[in-house]
Image 1 (tube, one colour):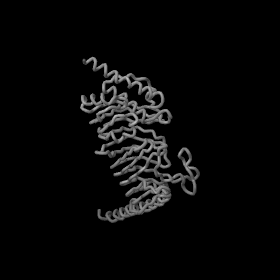
Image 2 (spheres, rainbow, N blue to C red):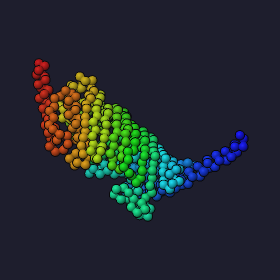
Image 3 (cartoon, rainbow, N blue to C red):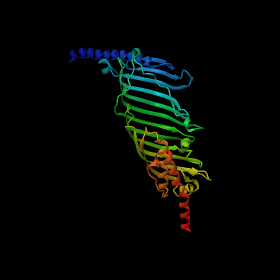
Image 4 (spheres, rainbow, N blue to C red):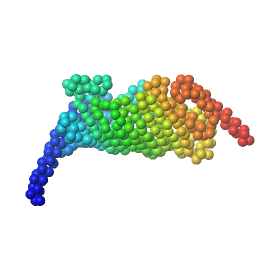
Amino acid sequence: MRKWLIPAGIIALLLIGGYFVVSFYAVKFIQGQLQKVTGPGFTVSEIHVKSTYLSAKGIRYEDPHSKQKSFQIEEMSIYPDLASFLTGTLGIRKLTIRQPSLYFYRSREGTFAQPWVSMEKGKEGSEISKDGEPKGKGPFHIKIGRIRIEKGSIDFEDRKMGEPPAQIKLRELDLDLRDIQYPIISTHSPIELKAKMEGKTKEGNLYTKGWIDLKTMDMETSFKVREIEVKIFEPYYRKRVSAEIETGHINMDARIAVKKRMIDAPGQLELANLQIKEGGGTVLWIPAKHLISILKDKGNRIKAQFHVKGNIDDPQFSLQETFLNRLAISLAEALGIPIKKVGETLFKGTGKGAEELSEGFKSIEELFKKKKEKKR
């Protein structure tokens, strides 16, 4: 038996040594590709080639024109897939991004501004065609088994909503995304995300899980929101709310499906601990004084069903307006207000539909008057 120990030990050492040698050259290759795709404005303070992975630290992006620092990563670890490397392709078994932070905004004109790594050109001017496939030699092809983001943060400023702009702040963001390829192909990539949303007095939680097609942007996910402050979204609803909402938080469960640019999202929303300042005004077309009275009877908690459907590319479709209009109808029904629906046009959120919705809610005052007269 002992005579096999020495040969077995030698073979084991060769296998282990070969693994580390191949890993070393694999991460050296990845290091070269990483440096190619970092264009103007990107800096990397440290790159270390470990025995089995590449570590890049202090990744920063500063806009060359505005000098705005909008993107940074404390550390990124790239673990190569040795099997794919030996076949002549670049495969990454796992990509871990630790403590990334991203700032971007939407201008008053509705244009999104964010840092993007310019990967439109590959070796010596080769380009990506419109369908995502390389022209000529094309850029390098990457397969990533898993992308893991840990302790990330996102700051989004929506200036289109007027002054002050909407501020969405996500913290402690963890993302798990699997089966990704570049150039991007159409495939179902499993996704799971959880994060905290920062409010004025507390943090809420959001969670989503399902799949996404990164090429077509089709998706099927579950979406959960817990204890997110209503005031965070004030810039989005202030044109529909003339009364002052002082406090309150949102709980929501929804299923979001997007196929061929058609969105279908049924769900349930709960408004809890809602406090409305005494006085006049309306909340989603509902007179505030009547809403306050009903809220007291319901323990300041209201549950409403909603179902948002529409074509994302339709210029007459607004996701924000459609959601608010659907919520207004559901909220009125949950409060026991017999609002007459005026047809599907009112859910488009623009033009005649929104006007009809407003007209529909004008009858609420009369409905409450009749109820009071009956009680007498």
